[in-house]
Length: 301
Image 1 (cartoon, rainbow, N blue to C red):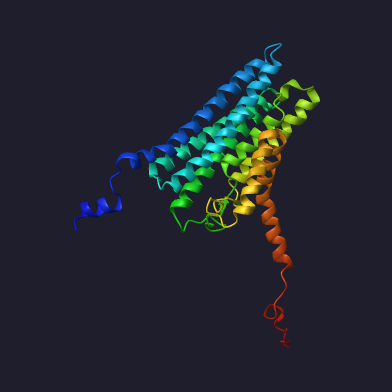
Image 2 (spheres, rainbow, N blue to C red):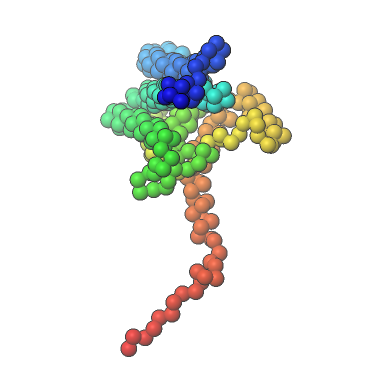
């Protein structure tokens, strides 16, 4: 059999509907990019609005739009991968496009939104504001690069740390989850931080700086985070998953502000908590009989 025939069998030509299926995941990814662009535009317009007298409500509305756009992008980002796997339409092009989209939507957009809505106009925080926003962006890019390398290299290990984990977990906080926490905070209280009193502005700005820095560190950490990839329509526990999913959707629909904030906080914090729990269990592990036997000291004299 010739090499051409072997290549044809491995990668059969795509015709008709089957060829169009490969466009669907990329369409979701393009929607993801659009949401990131929309978030940046609204953040810039909101920054201009609250610096103009009498436009406070408009500024809050624009920042809330930016936060919602990041939330919609989070949903699209989760759907494109699942649809690609379900339709068997995964491709190298789609993987690269998705990584670029994540840097734009969950890296650049949150960094800009945090700067414009939060600490960018706070007196005395000019260099800190630039530095922390860039730190968040670069850590997110490094997180994505590490994820791509680990996905393509089964034997890849994080230098000086744990090896690649199974698909049930992510290594480090996923960048979409980090962006979603910031979006949830803004959606919960869209009023720009510089519009508060002087003391409150300083307090909230420093608090946001700490949050952004912690999110950046968590993204490049080796904490395990649940991927939820084992939850699918083929789950063997539909009577548990489906009711919980319906309650989640209803909660987000009717009480989006507190529900999204609580969920994002729980997800971001559960990685370090899982690590602490594993260390606690390790210290509390009962000592076996072999481990309890220690060599007796002998008198050399």
